[in-house]
Length: 147
Image 1 (cartoon, rainbow, N blue to C red):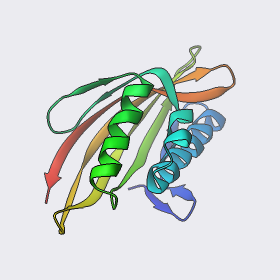
Image 2: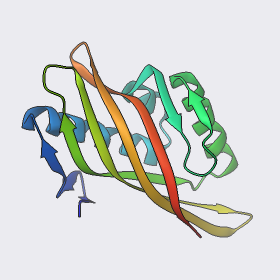
Image 3: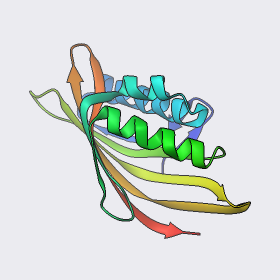
């Protein structure tokens, strides 16, 4: 089982190009750090302009980087203590294509009216190389536990 310790992801499996997989893990860490800081600009840098996100509870489709950033802005304004993290378990790089798959677990914590809330589940992310950088092209989440 993979875990994040400090600024490293320990135990994630990389299938295919080790260098590409490590690059994607670094980008995931950058996204997680930006998410923890509520840094919308840094989060946007990891998302493709046409990135898609399917939410974990209600299959809501959030279409495009700007829509995702606005959704996070609303969440952070409503719940300033919001913390989410994705932990990659496996990165698989494509052969001959600028694509990669990331499968892992996620967790989130926040409070509503002073009451602590949390959720966790699984996710799948599709990465693509845009120029020399890797960006998130699509993510699909499933909520498995909500407290």
